Structure formats: C-alpha cells, structure tokens
Length: 377
Ligand code: KG4
Ligand code: ZN
View 1: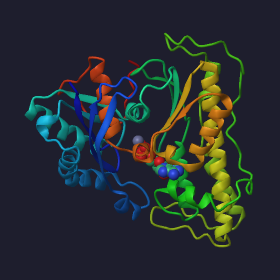
View 2: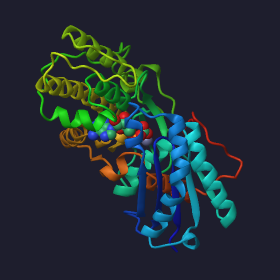
View 3: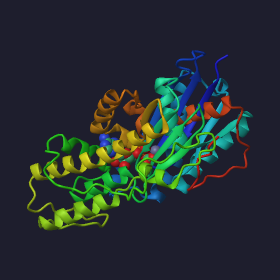
View 4: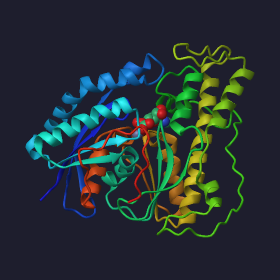
C-alpha cells in the first residue's frame, strides 16, 4: 500500500505545500504528486531582502490556499493523506510557527501522524526524491541563502555534518554582492544571468584560504563520525572575505557603495560590461571554492557519489562545472531539478517519509526552532 505524505514548508519566504507518495519501486521509491509554492519574493524585493514580520503575516494569508491546491493538484483530499510532515527549523521563527501550527492542527483534527523535519534534511532528500537510490556513502553539499554545509550520508536517512561555512552562506554572498552592484533581490539568479555576459578572469578576487595543518589526515571513522581537526580545513567554507574584496574593488572603481535597505547602489563609472565581468569573476570563485572542498572531502571520505542541493544549486555554472568535474573524477554527481532546488514542500514530505520509514514520528509537543541541529540518525 502506498504511503502518502502532505509536506508543509514555511521556514523563510515561500509558503509551500506538496503531496509525495511511495511507489513500491526500490530504484525510485518516492513520487511528488504535487508541489505548490506561493513565493513572497515580489513583496520582499521592495525592501531589498526578507522582512520577517511581513513574511509570517503573508504565510498566514497563503497557507490554507496552498495546501488546498496541493491536495487538488495531487488529485486527492484529506482522506488520502496518511501523515503530515512540516519544517520544524532552522529558519525565521515567526514563519516556521505558521506551518507548524497549521500542521499540528491538521494532524490533531485528522488523527494522523505528524513528522517534524529539519529543513536541511529536506534539501538533502530532494536529491533522493528526484534520483532515487544513489550510490552511498554520498557527500552532499547543501548550499542556500542561509546555509553552506557539507554532509556525509553513509546510509539512507543518516546525515553527518562534515563541514560548513565559517561566516556567510554562499547564497548570502550572492545576495549581498547583487545588492552592491545594484542587481536587487534575490541576487543569485540576477548574478547568474549577468555572469553569462562577462569574463570570469576579468577581476582578480581572493579565494578563501585555510591553514592546512595536515593535507593528508588519516581516514575518518565513519561509524562514530569523529573527524580529526585537520579535516575541518578541507571541508569548511568561507565567503565573507570575498564579499569584502568586491566592496574594495567597487571603491577602487569609484562606485558609491550603499548597503542600506532602500538605497540602490549607484554603479557610477561602471558600465554593464564591467558589472557582468565582476559577476562572472565572483561566480567563478564561489563555484570553484564550493567544488574544490566538496570533491576533496568526497575523495578523502571515500564517497561513491556527490549531491548538491539548496537554492544555490540552481546556479547554472555550479551545475555545469559539478557535472564536468564528476565525469573527470569518475564520481556521479546528482542535483535536483530547479523546482526542487529552492525551498519547496515536496522535499519536506520526502524527508518526512524517510523518518516514517525508519519508524520515527513526532508528538504534538514539538516547537518551531529558529536554530536546530540536524539529528544524525
Ligand atoms: O534554499 P533557498 O530557496 O532558501 C534558503 O533555505 O536559504 O535558497 C535561496 C538562495 C538565495 O540566496 C538565492 O540568491 C540563491 O538561493 N539562488 C541562487 C540562484 N537561484 C537562487 N544563487 C545562485 N545562482 C542561482 N541561479
Ligand atoms: Zn532552503
């Protein structure tokens, strides 16, 4: 009998609902039957970024319609739902609360199980939702507006954090740099588009460097998840220095840099080609540093595949370069389709199914959590 889960995601500025069912096919065990997203981007663009109070109020307006639509698109009704999965955190707590309260009310009214899901477990499972059973262990990079973290997945549903950004997330760097050069919010897609028109070696930007105490640390113990300190130098990321270098470059070019919410940057002496060159150069450094670390960590960990998920995995250069490198290294690389890259509820339903398959569910007393560690089992 197929198991059908309703997923709900409201951690940031997208109100999302989706229905995912089991298929019974071991190679591709889950199928998204609907994936509905009400984006608030147009509302927050006016402010240059997500305004938490506006976001939570908009979630309240949208959640009922989004869920009704998700059920209708899947050709089902509440009777066809076996369990409800909802993002518990991390994220904006006011936004998360809307989804959590809705999901708890529905679960209580229907007397169906509820599963609290970690947002990043959702991003990781987006890869399994799309590609089914990929070779494990897999090194999975989750790269979004709020996170840049590398996980090892030794077996389905087990997530070991092996590296993360020490400062800004990659998507955050995209958003900040886009604002600096007057490209607006959200910055990722805008820089991606501009970069296609520019030369990626036009502006010399620094790469994050860590002191490598030991370039060849001993292999890790994957059963305990204990990693020697030297390994953190291989697997950690950093993007704030790159953003500072862009600010310095703009200052040298005589560009008036405005960092306030409402004030657009006056690109001044820079013409469109120069902005495109800067975007291409910035994007190259971000993509290379993400992929250098991911492939090095994968090699060291003996991973049999690589996955890249989260909003920044929609980036055209990251996708292309990752697939090319994977071919070169003989490591299959898996990325979700664009509809599952940025925040969505199908990935939350998938992560919920994963927990249900492991015999786990939640009781109604869990709360929304702005910060939340991923559980390793
Ligand atoms: O996963 P996501 O939707 O939300 C978070 O959990 O943060 O990711 C949003 C982030 C934003 O920073 C956005 O600028 C970035 O993903 N993004 C991109 C692209 N599309 C979205 N970054 C680079 N290139 C893109 N094409
Ligand atoms: Zn996300």
